[in-house]
Length: 398
Image 1: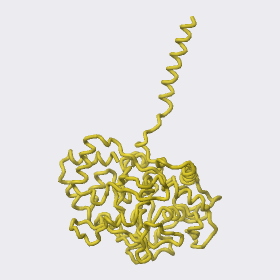
Image 2: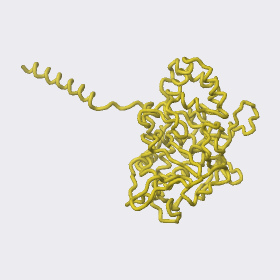
Image 3: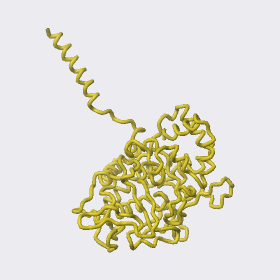
Image 4: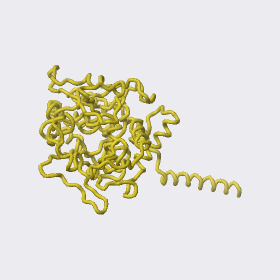
């Protein structure tokens, strides 16, 4: 009887374990998610990463803690689900500037449209005559590696006069530095301006500027770095403390880089070769190695973002008649391709690619390339259907 009872208990235990496996979701593989810290952070850095994670993803602003009065979002994470790309519902609108002479609509709410408002206030509208462009929030992962590169490394790929006659120039966007910017050893001044690295047109020099601007323009939250209220234009008391800002910047700097999947798959490898053969890699630079960094985990690391961080003329189809810094209206910074295959996970199950999310597939994004990338697009169209599928399969593996 005892034997029968023991056997029954074992059977029930096994059944319970199997049932739990079906109910409790398995832990996703590292290459299936975008969030998480870089390897090698020290204990104190891990704690700071977690504090930044809380500030970025868990802190929600309301009227009681400074939201608005006009705004776009109530938290950082609401635009970057799982640190991935944004959705059309979270797409930003920039307006006002038509050339590199400056934005004449700054006193009318520019450069960003705050399309929501707290009770008692009216959301902004684009002023008559102002040009505008939609900016879909980018993925956040791996930004620290891009931030750690030196200006000299970025300039090594620039070819403003197209001296090699390949139809591709590639130029930096030189940005006027905010008052709180302190150049690091790898920054090089150009008539008092510095190379922009972040944003659709590379309008932010570093992640501090990107973060401070996002608090102010996206959520209407002032800080000691940017104390000007987005609604009134007046200087007011900081609504987010310096520690939170610095922790969020550290969080963004130490998010891991996306991990490629199926790297040994023969079709993925063939697709990568096609990617290079038709010229895509001339702008989407595959490999970089960081120099020494103040964060040891980012020092001397080789990574594969598939971007040169430079501006390129993308032709009339992607000319939105809006620009930032020294960029022309048709120039856009080469977006990093790592993580693109995971984009549907944060975009509601589908693709919303290019600067404004207008492309709903990788192929559609390729076909909208023009200007300096026209030869690559034409080369793609000359591929066989099978070769095109291999190229897309490679990009989906990133």
